[in-house]
Length: 232
Image (cartoon, rainbow, N blue to C red; front, side, top):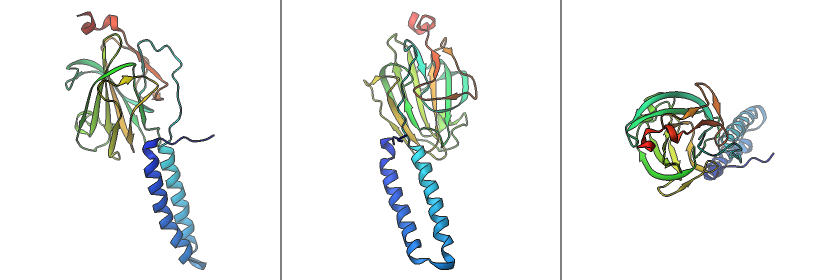
């Protein structure tokens, strides 16, 4: 099966391949006889490392097959590490259901839109690079915030959070962008987390420690009829 590579990894893979080649070729040219184990070990380690990076930047083609009406779909591959009612102070300024998914280095790191609608707000915040599974990473780490307004008028906030290894968050969404659950809204490089803030009343179909598949797993369903902001 052919592995499709996300375009965010193209430059890294090319440069990384050249660097590893520059490291390995001289070893094979200069070390012989009783030292041949050195280039063998270095080459084997280089191949394993390169394949891990290729695996990180894989970009599988996915399609959501469920009912899209009011659907909330996982924005990332990974494990649910937070699921609770919180107050969101940055944009929503109200109580919401926080659903957080932590992505390990072995997960696909593309991020999908969680709901259909239109992007109405984006912002990037500089910050720290502590472990992404820590609760305080949501407010202290490097992060990007995107708010989507659904066709029913509800607002869903999605936050990309850098982790201890991540050093770059890529956000494609901009105000006015049409959001579709089958489209990528961004990418986080090398370990990270995605938080969703959903309206109170949203039906939740996952629990802590559940595994999600971005663009595929139905994690919730919005209930506009139970949203006090919509009724108002």
